[in-house]
Image 1 (spheres, rainbow, N blue to C red):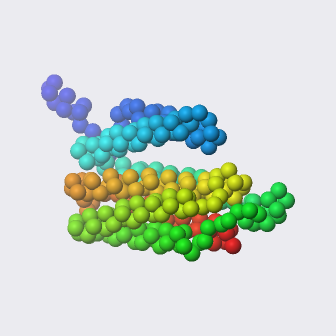
Image 2: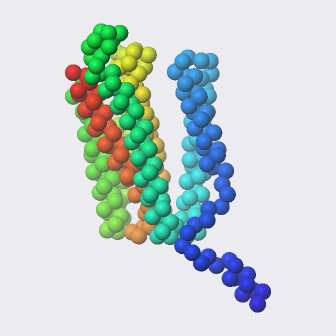
Length: 272
């Protein structure tokens, strides 16, 4: 009877996952807060601002690695991610993407507030006087094509996963990561070639804040897709169980759409 009682207590009679206590949410919030402080210090040229930003960002990446490691272990090796748990995760990712939309909405609000009715302080014109804007049909347009192509390849990977075409899944996901790295490289080159900086008034601040945070999201999406590629090579993503990849793909499509609005607003309309 004792053995049967112990087995009865150890058997889970519901499809939900009661997560074990984890330090990572609290540690991640501290790292993100430190990144914000370091970023402000760096932008205002405080001593050791860049050092604090770099260390905080490295710690945040480390927390991301350990947290995702725990989630992968719970889903792949412990089998806690049942159908209803995956449904809850999907709602969580959707709410997260909605919050990201509102985050970028603030930058678009600042941009259009300043560009639709330019004040006398910036010469009553847009772009402001003295700003040499970037040509939208050079690197920005090329980056737009690269991101659109990466959206196609990540969709190709998703359909290959569902169809159980492993070789095509690996190839398409690898191409997506390569395109993401190429996009980031061109973005960094564009920053180095620009004649204006973050401190150059409302145009510089809105441009670098919006495109810079978009670049950060591209970096996060690239890391997510790279983790998915490693899991795919280790046979952890299957035809029926690949929500980790789905969430990364949704996030990547969000990054694509945001860039389209950035290109039309800042580069094309706002730079003419």
